[in-house]
Length: 363
Ligand SMILES: NC(=O)c1ccc[n+]([C@@H]2O[C@H](COP(=O)([O-])OP(=O)(O)OC[C@H]3O[C@@H](n4cnc5c(N)ncnc54)[C@H](OP(=O)(O)O)[C@@H]3O)[C@@H](O)[C@H]2O)c1
Image (cartoon, rainbow, N blue to C red; front, side, top):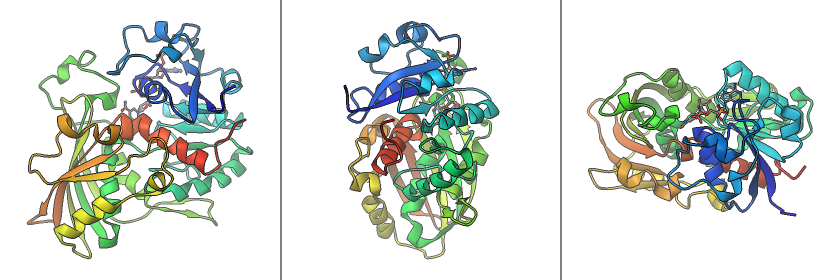
């Protein structure tokens, strides 16, 4: 029998789910044994259920093709086959909250890509290089749920991955005011140009709920575990204001960002801080960890989506154009892959961290 942990992918037929299935092909620690989706797909082989809507550049993994898709709502049945699940189902927020907790209560850890639990006070929302210590709140969540090994952990929204890691690397200079505009790819809405032809040659200046997430989620990541309240208490600085724009790009969210610092650094200090920034995933050499989390590109015309979105297999962040600003102190451009680091890849790295920390084990 394989020593790898048995994984279920909830919402495995969708765009993020497909990314999970692709990223987990030949994963050294995890093996996809179960795929679940809506009742529409249940009972079909994965290949049949996804027929005509495979959205990845690489072919569907052979090992997934013949898996019979289960119904996400049959919690006990799915949970009985796996050591933990990734969640990428698209349902209402309340339904997602309920079903993710239902899985946790079967003693099945849930690593979720969804936003439903991002503000549940005892659910950790983690970028493994930034706040791995937030997993400590899981013990309080287990108390609440009455579980021994079941819990929910989440990763943050895709939009913040192009600037929150950068601001974290600059923490010593005390950024206190940030203005960001994000230029977000259509895959962030689960779409390709085939599904969304109106986006060809177009810009849409609205992405529902995205600005609030982009302004607030970084503060929760920079918060701390409060052992008296038994929850994560968000940080209060820096203040972030954000505009989120949908652009005609398939993969890759770009951010144009302005920052004010209490301790104004030099450009050399800023670049140096990015280049040396790393965390526990790099130290532990987790399987999906980028060797270098953030790269700085000196050329004036970088980062570019076409050239840089796949940096470190889509798990790294590319930064360029750091320059002084006449209103703010400094400005820069950041780029990250929204469905890899920003979605499934970020969740896989969280699961690797959870395994390394002993939270995810064989049942
Ligand atoms: N795309 C991104 O980059 C991104 C980034 C961050 C977060 N997210 C979030 O991740 C989730 C998935 O996004 P996506 O883009 O992958 O969506 P998607 O392509 O529409 O896939 C949705 C998945 O959920 C399943 N599903 C839909 N309705 C269901 C129901 N009533 N009961 C059970 N399963 C149901 C679908 O199954 P069927 O195939 O059987 O219909 C499919 O597997 C969403 O909550 C989204 O907001 C997406």
